[in-house]
Image (cartoon, rainbow, N blue to C red; front, side, top):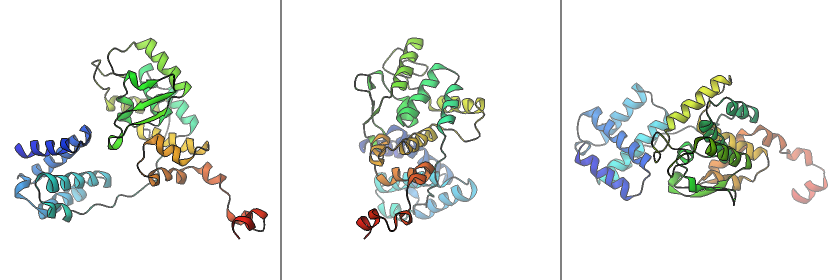
Length: 287
């Protein structure tokens, strides 16, 4: 794509898209051009449709991946190529909203006990203990840990928003142990091979998979499932859904509210109105 790729990269940066989003959009645009072996400037909605059909019918990509390609192509045509009529004509796919898989507290403990190193155990404990996304926990800096106030500063989370999350006593203890054992240098709390490099997301995922195998967990285990488990466990402990929304950094309360569907304990504690019929409470509140 050459010059077109450079212009699209500049457009993404000017709109302050996150580096990971920029990389994904550029990758999707390159795949589109490579499929047709032509420049996107020479193509329109029919070529876009043919490419998306190829993804769905032949490559059998997931709805979420399909959605990402559509977002990238809409940006390419609407912003970089200045052809909004093509962008508008690209249909958004319907992405099913499935209930996330959840680990029990016992399963989280077993997973932590099976982690192979102090570093990865601390990363996983911090991710679960604060409900962090994998990029958020891997990107933490030493200065982001505020032990006096009991807070972790999450910088540039999803949609580029900062937030504060709790620093639990068990997480703080684990961080102090990790610090004494590894003595990391540089600004990164969990550095990669180089002191100022971010630890690889894939390295964390691999460590999780291996720990799940050692602990004989049959459920799928990923960093994001730890985040789902954090939110569901908070709900079951009676935490207000608005507080959970702030901790997770969700833009909409509707995203957070789905955990109420997952939590069987939360559902089980909810009384049916039929149980109050005829009572003083029902007469006062229900009429």
